[in-house]
Image (spheres, rainbow, N blue to C red):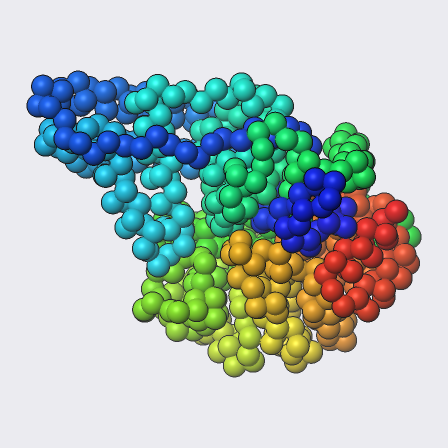
Length: 583
Ligand code: PEP
Ligand code: MG
């Protein structure tokens, strides 16, 4: 699945078929008519208003605030049944709309002779600009929240209501989309989303996944490239959007859709069934989670544990480094919900495109800077707090700790030293913890992959982070839509590195799993089996699809296919082999 067109760059085929490449944001395939939300907004007049018009303009603004507040309350209600993540996001919109400083500033501007529309634009643009200049990518992406609330207020003031029902059964193509609109479009059975705004942390990404709607983001000028009403295909597995597909492509994707639908109906019956290939090769499926609630979903879907807790989400939620007690409570909650299944807490992967609090100064290349373990060793106080909290949560022996972004042996040695120090302190304080808590490492830098043979002797497990491994191996920023056509974990260089790591693990009897997006990539399952991977960690929503694919495969065919893939020299060649392998 996912494949033959998986790595194509923008081309115009003679038939009129037009392929756009973006960032895969939510898995699945959608075929339908495009409903394009135009990004043009009428210009705002900055002429001063008459003093006699001030009262009406203030009233117009206040009515708009009331309407948008009402819409958001409605959206939170809808979100309750759809997704808990969505309601958190909408709450952040509510905070903006209810912010007394923003409201007072806008009213003051109107009272000084600015029109209501211009006052809204001026005030929101200041907040947006401040956030756009923030070092932290999460803050930068919150600038979009201000833009979206501003646009909403303006449309309400102009009585421009978005007619969600107009997009019934179609694929929405937009510059960006607000969570509220996304929910309303979902009610009108929108089949998929395509947006211009990229960024893996954008709300569009998180929401689309939560709502289970296929989405591709980060396609520049998508609203200009896709005509209203055109037939389009959204391939949320590979990040490809096909505009006006030719008959052959359409047939290929229709077949994929039919298979996807069949999957869905059969998937439920797979809960509780073993994850084994047709020829008896067993694989462990575990989950990637960000919040305690997701553990329950993972367990319900039949995950055999948690392979990755991205603990940075705790930092993003709180906006700071929580105390040992706060962290302990959060880790215990997760460990208890999963018990007796194992849970792997990854130490804070701070830096780069993630939470950046505590990084001493601006870095020109943050992805190559003080990130992951480097930051933790730079701030051992923060690292110690976290290690102690994870150890405190380990008393029932279902907790493991994983170190992010290791690239040199000294980092592992120093980290292990600090972990031992923490154990010593806790033991002196009489705290109950698991003295044998397994400690593993992410393999997500090319250096770690090349040296996996040395690392394997010193860790209890290794987990390959294919997102970063691809980013660093191919020197492509994983969040940058300008190079999205190069960034692909199915590049032969990445596959060969995975093979090296698996080999190292086998030699030293160290478990190797994959927790990057490649683990759940529909095109990659047989390849990963053939490479000898025994554990895959994926978003809970993907567990059953992945189990189904594994149960359909045979290890012997997978090994044969993998041997061919390992000789490939380009990503398209890999996709072609994988597509052939499934027929
Ligand atoms: C990865 O890099 O593949 C990974 C799982 O870590 P993250 O996506 O959190 O960087
Ligand atoms: Mg990573």
